Length: 327
Image (cartoon, rainbow, N blue to C red; front, side):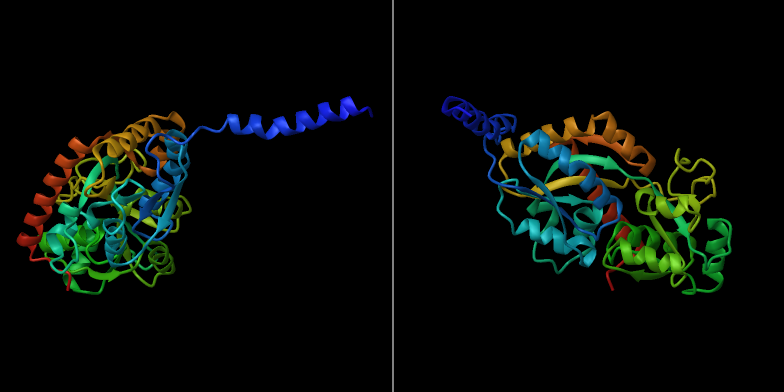
């Protein structure tokens, strides 16, 4: 091989990494490092599933690494506090549900932070319908019969939740108050172990998002007995709604959204929200979310803030009316 040819081959070899790097998007202006999507629950639940579906697509839109970080405990308040204590630069985002923000504001009086003051809305991602499901220990065919059993034998029927103060906990306690039944609460630190014990028959039932229970429903390991709300769900058309069964008060809008630490610049929030809107509009993502019952919303900080305010007022009223406590 001639010296000239060796030089050509060497130049071509050196050009390969340059060409590859040219195809990698440059970090966006204002990017200060990887973005953490802090999930308040263990892997497997609807919040975690949504975060993991969105993370790689958000990374493409933001030209930043986006990682999912699960921080469990205290119905998600450990994760919320972690974000509150993080720098207000948009690199730590809580993938929140009501339990960490609006319910916490209504229930918790000994927090080191104020959820409605110290966390600010970024984007309302999705709404998530909830369904009552039972495990192999339950023989009743519908929720009305199960309520009758829970009234006749208070505390006998147990339900699992991701923790004290979670949406599941509060909605089930409302059901107790409104029907005179008494379902016994068994709180967990997340969805995974709760589902394992439900499948094994160590606990009896739960009220959960479709995303959390869909695999077990598909395998016939759990049975759906009612959809919470006014209408049947397209994913479970054979299952009656609570309204059909004459059970009122279960038409609670359950949401998942992104919130950031207060003080995060408006421009940073707007940039993240714009990326979220693009991601939620992707047909392939919507195809993944639909079987899980997730309804894309994609509302920005102003609209999401109004939803949070309405939600906080509703839960405060419900907690007061039902005399619900964390004890």
